[in-house]
Image (cartoon, rainbow, N blue to C red; front, side, top):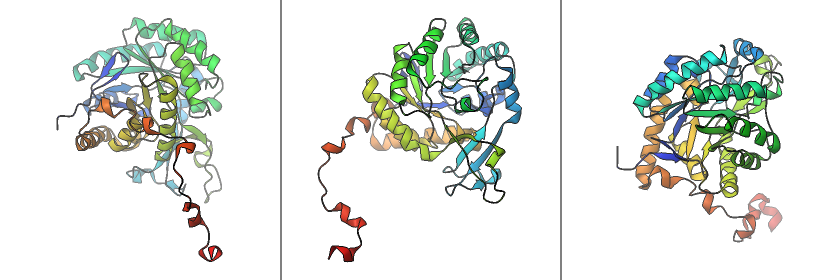
Length: 352
C-alpha cells in the first residue's frame, strides 16, 4: 500500500474507503454480512425490508439470470466475467421487520471493530409502517438507514413496495422518515426516471444526508430458443452498460445540488476502476451489489486494491478524486469545431 488515503466523507459521516456493499440476497444471513465486513467494505447495506407479507412471500419466487453482451442467457456457473448483466425478480427479507432490525442493530455494533457500518434498508409500502420502522431503527441505535424509493419491482408488485417518481411525494416520504430517524439517512433514487437530479434535489430538501443513484430498470428479455421470457417474467436489469448513465446522473446532480452534497453511485460498477470512474463523475462512494452477489465477496477486496492502485498512479487521495471529470464537462456549444469529422460517415466516392 502507498501513502494515498482512501477515507471519504458522506456529510459528517466518515468512511474508511469509498466501497459500500449494496443490499441484496447475499446480505440476508449474518455470515454474508460479516464476510462483506471482513472483505473491507466501509459499509454494508443489508437486505431491504418492509411490513408487507406479500413482499416476504415474493422472496421464495426470487430468480436471477446472467446475460451476455449479445443479450443471451449465460449458464450461472459461467458468471465470472465482469461484463455480464443481471436480470432478476426479488422479494424482501423473509422475516418480520422488527426482528430483522434488531439483528441489524447487533451487527452494526459488531461492525465497529472493522471501523465500518451495517445499515438498514427500508422500502416504502404503507407510510404508517414506514415511519414506525424508521423510528425503531433510531431507537435501536442503528447508525445508517437507506430509504429505497427506487426499487424497480414496484411496477410489478403494486401492493408490496412503492416506486416513487414524483418530487412532492419524495419530499413527503423523506420528511416523514427524517422526523423520526436522526442518524445518517441515505435515499436511493429510481433508475426509471428522466428527472433523477430533480428527484434527488427533493430528497435533499427534505433532509437526506446523501442520495444514492441509481436503481436498476425493469426489462424484458425474450429467449430465442424457447420463445418465452427469460425467468418467465419481466425483471430488474443492471450491468456495466449502466455505468455511463449513472455517471451522467452523478454529474448532473453534482451541478444541481452543489459539489459539497454527497452522492453515492450504484448500478454499473464492477471493479475498483469503475468505482474511480463514478467518483470522477461526482460520487463520494460507490455501492457494489450485483457483482458481489454473482461473484462473491472477494470482489470487494480486489476492487479496493484496484482503486488503491489507481490513486497511487495518479498520486491523489480518494477525497480529491471526487468530481474531477464532472467539473470539466462542457456543453455542445462550448466545443471547438471539427469541421471535417462528419465526412468519416460518408462513402469516399460520394465526396469526389
